[in-house]
Amino acid sequence: MKIILYLATACLALFACSQAEKQQSQPTRDEVLVNKGLKVLSDTNVKEKDEALAAFKEACQLGNNYGCHKTGIAYNNGLYGLDKDYQQANQWYLLAAGKGYIPSQQNIANLHAYRLLQNLNDIEGYKWLKLAEDATQKCLPGTIEASSGINDAERRRLCQLASTGQGRLRSIFRKRMSKHEIQQAEQLATNWQARQ
Image (cartoon, rainbow, N blue to C red; front, side, top):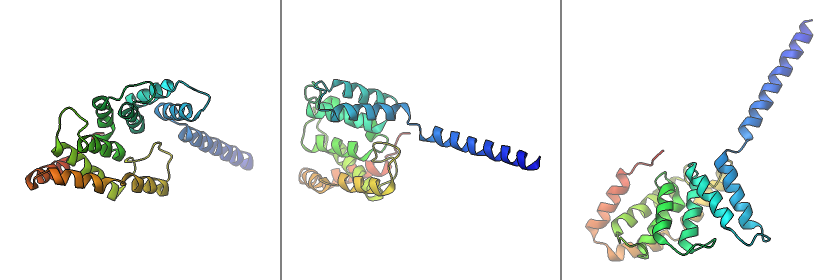
């Protein structure tokens, strides 16, 4: 009788563990939407890619940084039937950058460095570049990945890739900015706190 009770208990424990694993491996709604958008983009049979944009926007509204970033890229480059709109791109990038997402921080710096925004602000642009540079050096989880299932080595590789071009942007800003403006931007970056 004890053996049967022991086996029953063991079976229940294994079942509970398998259910917990199954629940942990289920992607969240925002991850499903990002994957849907990426799948649409990679499907050569789909001519209209606006379905991808809708998926990325919805993922962003659910708090997915990569969804916000991909939407910003769509406006930045005039993709999926959109006209180029740097102001809109900046707004979408800000949603992810404000939570510490490196690629969006760097893209905001790009928009400022190349004077693509209506409100020119080198101090703000340099602040975002400094934040991207600092985050790239630390490369913390959540700062770069497209999905939560990314491993540490891949995240580091993506962080290194994200740092490409930072030196060029720094040079552009430093040629236009006074020492005082650079100090202001660096102080803003130091005092900045990511949103949750």
